[in-house]
Picture 1: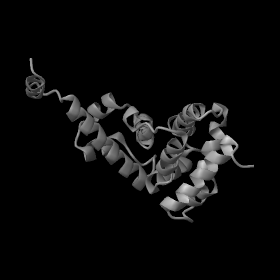
Picture 2: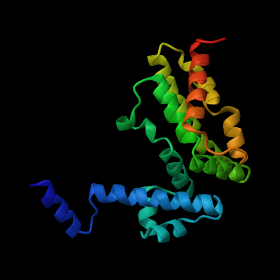
Picture 3: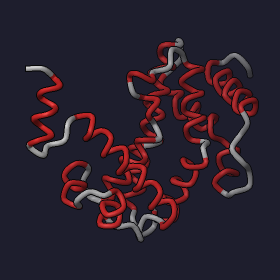
Length: 198
């Protein structure tokens, strides 16, 4: 049976194909991101996300889970550089991927959402860390080993890649860094961790 025929039969039975499910998931995450950023965590409901995305709430719940799971899926979306097809070839490229992903306006805004909700939703803060900073640090640790460095230096490298510039971004004091500003910060961070400079 051809793939085309299977897809046709699945469509006739009302079951979405894998491609359709992937597109629906992407649409849901886009909508969820927009709503979390515009309304904050507490004010967003699964009903609002499902309605805006044009799917049933039950479908949303079955495919992703509750609101905290949805937010974590949005956070993981910021770390697509960890996916096999996006895998950097060396430590500098890995550092660039982390830095550029987390310095975007959207990533900074999501970080603000978590900070605003952390006191009322402490579990959300833990889940954000597990699906965000911890993922980035594990990713850097792997590339540090490949570069002859210590995986235990990953938290330091992660901190240097964000640093004071990220704090200023969170406070709305600085715009997204230019390519040259990013290049300099990334190079310095990697050099410090690998011991190339004092």
